[in-house]
Length: 383
Image (cartoon, rainbow, N blue to C red; front, side):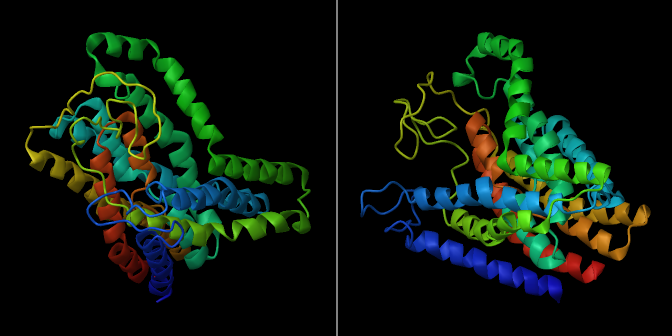
């Protein structure tokens, strides 16, 4: 019942975010069903401004503050535990499984394989994971092992593959671009790793871990009064994350194939992005590799991501958790985190590299829709 109550409460906040975006309550105009642009009214763009502000506030200030205050006052044993090991092991195993199926069964190129893998195992730990951890387990630490593995391992490795495969090269212009990308491979890896470390939530998490390590070694802990401002700001992270997520769901998904005259990242030949802002000039647009192929293949890719995300991951986490003897509370925590939907970040990465952005968006929507019955089932099975 506690799981259902938490999910219903969170769903109400997500629904409020959806209404805010659809009605344009923070932008003065609303989104139509037929286009990703808003109905002209006050001269603003497509209503993304208000959503971007809330997302930035949650992602760069509130969530990092919550992770810092939570970790700074915790025992490291709660972070490095058997439950965390189960989370890391099952996520890594399913990532390898998904990559193998995508590459050798579905015969996808390296870039689409990387995006498919990320869509299958990279969960929404920020907008959904943190609120769920707070409302269901009364402890934001529940999401820390998942966040660390994603931000420090999954994202850097996947983006490095995308860089080395030439996915982001202008026009993917043949062997010359691929050779240039290959030569800059290690530079790309370093750049992506640095970007992951500079992630605000990662900074807050690592800073909190550092304080916890120092406290463990010296026996001295930060006074509680020093953490009060972080607690106050961090308390806004869960509701802001849910509101932002609901607002994101109100925006129509991008098409599987970019419109004529537009590249896969949403930039037209004149160098203007979908929001009407100036973008870097691009080479002549190349046709996405999947255009003209059987659309059943694309549907199979989405189905693979949904199968891994909504079924296999929580099931494998439950089996492994039982095998290593996790207590009921730790098992419920691990399986619940494994049942989270695909993160919106995956669509962001895919759009940045012009690879499978529509597929990533559909995987996010489907896994989000299906995660509710999955989470209820998890709650019923784990108590």
